Each structure stands twice: as structure tokens, then as C-alpha cells.
Length: 111
Image (cartoon, rainbow, N blue to C red; front, side, top):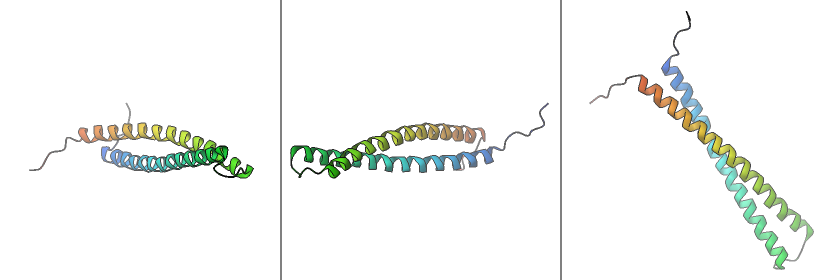
């Protein structure tokens, strides 16, 4: 027979709530980096188009910066998007686990 006591549902709920908070913070952080990536792509793209159309005087440094902004923005946007999707899946699973544990407690509604 297994001598380990059943896990304390209250402690498990607290652990899940801490995990939910951590995942929520990660999602916020990812969303900020996604926004920064989008801004970098847009800004770099506008600068690149302005340089190519002659709206701005051609400068190799500005061209390099524009290409770097577009490529860096794409990388930041994509990697943080996949991290955010993973965190959202983990968050949904943790919230479902927490809800299941709360349902097992058979709490009464007070009137």
C-alpha cells in the first residue's frame, strides 16, 4: 500500500494560482515584445521604402539599420508569438486544473 497522504487540495490550488500568475506575467511580457517587433518591422520597412524611393538621401548606414530593424522585428515578433501561444495553452490548462480542484472541494454557497 502507498503510505503517501493524498495531496492537500488547498496547497495544490495555491501552487496553481502562483503558476497562473507567473504565466499571466509571461503573456504580458510576450505581448510587449510582440508589439516592439511589429513596431520595428513597420519602422524599418518605412525607412527602407523611403530610402529605395529616394524620399530620403541614400545612406548605407540607414539602409543597414532599416534591414536590421525589419529582420530583428520579424525574429522578435515570431519567437515571442510562439512563446505566448505556449504560455496561453499552459495558462488554460492550469486554470482548468484549478477549477477541477475547486469543484472537488464541494463548497457550499452561503445565502
